[in-house]
Image (cartoon, rainbow, N blue to C red; front, side):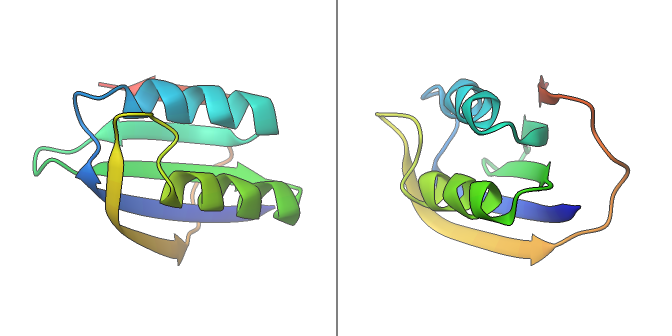
Length: 91
């Protein structure tokens, strides 16, 4: 299982970023979570058996899946968390 934790900063809250990320994850069969942080950033935990799909997901996040969003910085780290069954928006 390929797992990453993404920290996204820019115009990523109040522009439909979590919803667009959720829709993108569903299309690519990515499992995990997306949530707003108090500092204005967004954290995404994502996993997939398919490394190419996960790379496609990360590339789309880098460009912002939300039309009015803007990603200024994307930090991608390999992660180790419990497996997810679905992709969910938190908070």
